[in-house]
Length: 275
Image 1: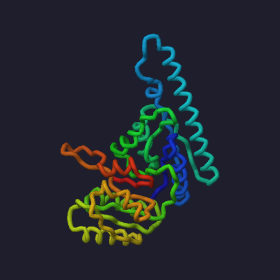
Image 2 (image 1 turned 45 degrees about the vertical axis):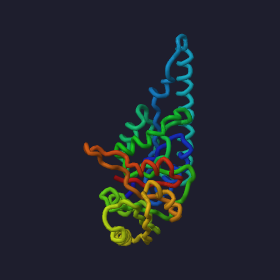
Image 3 (image 1 turned 60 degrees about the vertical axis):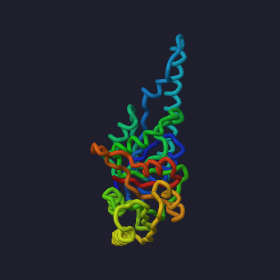
């Protein structure tokens, strides 16, 4: 059951799409939206090495960056509140200040789903080297997560990347059990390198999806997922990619998997991530 959705008002080209997807889901589930903005004064005021005699100019530049970010935040909030008002969706705004990843993770704890842009977080036209934050918050465990592209694309068909691992199974189960989207045509795909027999894995996964009333198609791809996952998604005409997003190192730490990282950095279609 989805009742509280957190949407990152990131000030990137993906913000409008994130708002649109959030409103669609809020109307479907009668859910409340929380639009979150985060301003990080430390990063905005840090303009790099300051030459001798350049302190005043550096201070002026830092203040200009702060002012620009604040203007863009107000624009994003206005866009969010107007869209929610027009759609009749209950909403609130969370204005955060501090480390972007920490603040987003803190707010995530009290929401059922988080929606962000695929690339870039809380940049507001100022911090152009901030794209790593998307990977940081995912690596830190922010799930379930819907990462959306710049172009808003209604989600009507999905593709599940499945290799039989517990990670892939949890993502597939979350896709079904959280009931975020109504059952829709779903292609379950196995790629080269999975454990076990591909036909058996695909049949078992399809059977599970069908038990949740998703209509399914099975597809086996004889290539590594990193090389073929996005192309296969396009071939399937899928509007959504469902995949697990972490791998465990020998030391027991969870890191973002190579395929998930590649998909996030290159996809032009939404991705649903779970761990």
